[in-house]
Length: 219
Ligand code: CA
Image (cartoon, rainbow, N blue to C red; front, side, top):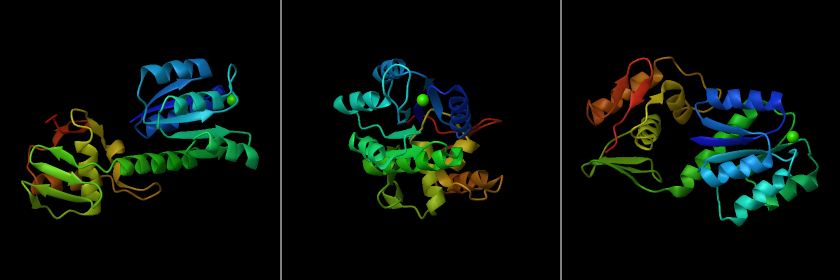
């Protein structure tokens, strides 16, 4: 997941950046609207965290540009302007969520996860990988056309791995995909789910990359 953070306050920007990175997102951090617009033209982002009070242009201009250009990338506005009018204005412009400063980083993370989930949910496309098919609508999986019984967590873990083939996924990233925030996660939980997935599909479906995480090769 690649995120764009647009925030000119150095201290807040650093804190948000650290939180996002810790959650396993790759992040580009820009502190002005023009450089953010440049990034948006160059890169595809999964989500944008957008401050409104920026040194060059108002953040709403960035949002306006994105929506005018047909982008549906989710945007969370973070701003000190917290009047109802501003809130409604931001949402009218096509922001997906709105967080007033000061806010808790954990609160921002939860909103981001919710938006990304909604977005993934919106796609609802079946995922094909070799002889495995995932049906996100129903959290169902088939192997060579035969339904494979799965727990919800196994399903989410497999979906995350198969949506990121060719990339090594860290345990933290996988936990993020499988567990809700604040849930206690046993340190070997992902390992246990991986073990079950290997038994249900095949031993060599998921590779362990020692000291880093897990990898499913590109199909
Ligand atoms: Ca600002």
